Amino acid sequence: MSQRQLGTNTVLFTDVVGSTDERRRLGDRSAEQLRERVDAIQTGVIDSHQGRVVKGTGDGVLAVFASAGDALAAAGRRDRGTDASPPCPGIGAHRAAIGSERR
View 1 (cartoon, rainbow, N blue to C red):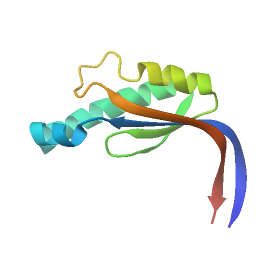
View 2: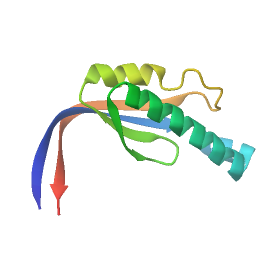
View 3: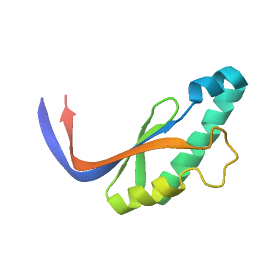
View 4: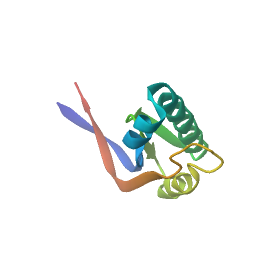
């Protein structure tokens, strides 16, 4: 496989802390509705800061930003304005050269 360089980007991961316990407490249907609301909010914030959601991770997202500043701005407000519980997703970010494999 050959690797094609895509450039330096910032990768942002989110994870809803306590989501397994929250699922047990709420039940599957309510927990799934909550997850969908949180995903929609996070996706909207990521999009509004020129990011791209690469994939959902079940209780979070993996997103890519060209700018570290945009990633940090999105991270700083990804859960504002929501009554979704649990309200505090965990977050991680890393800036690096990112490539992709072609098959």
